[in-house]
Length: 194
Image (cartoon, rainbow, N blue to C red; front, side, top):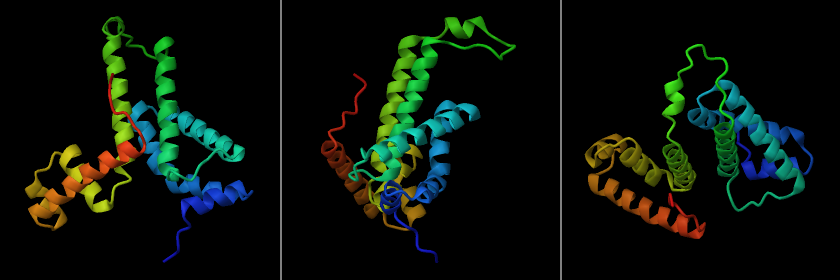
């Protein structure tokens, strides 16, 4: 089995001038980051643009020496991508573009309820922040949390799926929530739509 070089070592190598290290990092996380961007913008060209902008920002930050090793590389890149997605939506809200659509529908514009669009964006921000935080949990806790919250599975189903007792599944869920609270407090993150 080929030994995988850790992200932090690749980042260090890239900062030291090894261009290939960045290429490995991009290839390693390409799928995950692209899928994440596409799930928000639902457009291939926009996804490609935001992906490129994300790595331009990554490169600039690394070259300036402003990257701190506190966070893991992937969550850091995901946060950059997420901020660029929000910028993209903000720009497009100010300058609505309707070209390229033969079936342009005036009602879709009249029906554009601003506060709801704003709330949706905030909800996505919170979901995205949570996704990055959930990634920091131990695998067993993260799996139970995802099955329970995002897949809406019962503890009986989780127990069958993971091969552990219902009590163990409940315990993992409890620890996942405790750890999530600790991570939120440690990072002083405010998950609120106020």
